[in-house]
Image 1: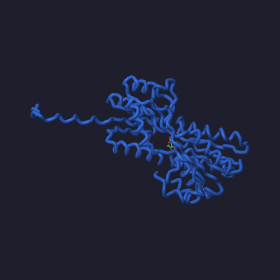
Image 2: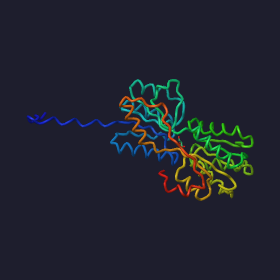
Image 3: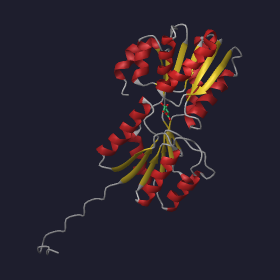
Image 4: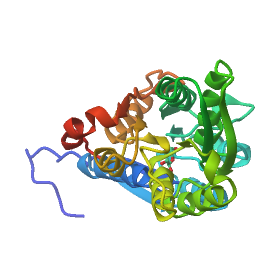
Length: 305
Ligand code: AHR
């Protein structure tokens, strides 16, 4: 080891980089891509060593990724869980290893809430309520609705249906006549909508899609069937991605409820607080708003995702 010349101060040891393991659901929608970009971009900006794993929509892949993050002794785990249940075993392992787990965008159901530190997300039940209130107003409380659900067992699919149905209780002439999962993708949204049109074409007055991508697929199916989305059929969905604004400007989608995916800065601010020993709330909520056709052209230029 070379000798330190007399009188010279020892240089400070290079600060150890923060290591974060991020297990993402997949890349099923434009919303998801925007969320990944926001979190990865912020990690890069802050010089964080991020280990990223794309689960391709499978919980088993997420459990495997978490097991590997624990083995690698990462400092923090960020998890966007594909479904709500089945997390106890792997999260107990993370807890025993002393690794805090930050949930992003989707919540989980666990008997022991200490298995995760906090959830940073939108209120999906409220999003469902907002969609139903808007649709009730638009249709004067009278509509046959078909519903395109998100991934079965996922928090947004469960909660967006719950909030929507809660409001529908007040409107006896608003009925969900068909409901099926289209897994949050545009391709499945089109496929399921085609089946709905085939079996019940004359009765479909409105579409409620749990995300914009499925609504965009449904619009394609309606057009191919010679129907007029946005006019004969009223469509509302959730996310407020660029594609939804384009469809609103074109008059094909009627409204979208925002679900903000740009959570990178908030995720890393929260991680810093947790590491500094600060107490953070169990639920850190993103605030969302509803956009409709009338203001879409004015707003589209300001959208970041
Ligand atoms: O969990 C958020 C939902 O997941 C988004 O609304 C949807 O587009 C995504 O796939």
